[in-house]
Length: 386
Image (cartoon, rainbow, N blue to C red; front, side, top):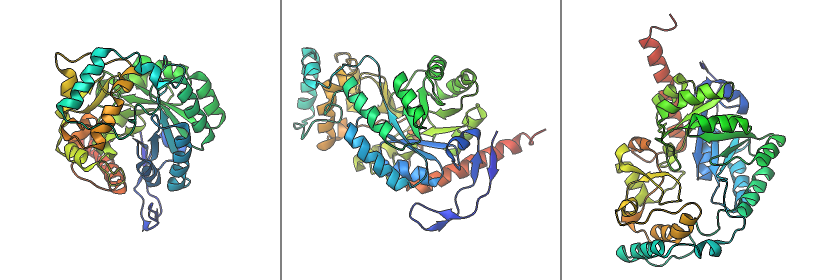
């Protein structure tokens, strides 16, 4: 399944001499020149760069960034990552409005929903927003998507991850520029569709995962996607927080792991102290899947926000992008003004393993060490290859 090999001393991201973690070879490593098949998704450029420098592949979540921000931030990611492989993630759902016209969507919002949001402002004493929220400063639309795709195509990223949607023309243009396409899949049906659309790599993202998640658990999903994928490599995702999870993914037929929540408490991520406190205190049963964030299923920390939207008298969340426009400014105001009961964050059920703040390099090294130990333990338990 995998080969473990030793390597000569190298350097850390800080430039200090160090011995890199032992390499874990699976076929997917050869696609990108990785030391370990560890992929990290993060909204933090420093986190993504640090994971790439450690020997994995860091992927920057850029879906809520403008085209120019994507250009600038991917250039910064390359600067920090050096010549190591890097990736970027976009969400490109079909059926979005053609033009970036937030006012047009705002005019369509039902009065009952707007009244409910006004009630949250009043009930929790939320001051007016200081600026447009992350979800309202532009409309998720075909116009914005085209600009984002052009910015990615101009970059030198090695991997392009499609969270939702895989426009055929975009996939073709990425491949012409030597970029590999990874598709996030929540079901075997999604996997087959992604392969037909040209995916080079699949992420089997189980229900345990953060943010946009499907109904099938990781343990059930991964081997089904592996069977559907044939020769296309698969990464296991959803609750991958320790080396035991990585080893389990390998045993299920995956060639590596796609991680996300693992990096939220790292020093490089620099999450808000109030949110860090909540993450450290949370267990796996302290997350909830709601549509109140974006209109699509979205796993996050349970909070007064999710409780309010699940109340019997709460309106049903709107579809994307209308829900974005409905709540985006309020969500921004909650964070800007530190309204603690309503503060929450996207995180998977693996939040139970978030216990302290540590640097990325330390988290990464422990993950590799734990993976090797788990693989060795299984070998010892079964008496080796008999």
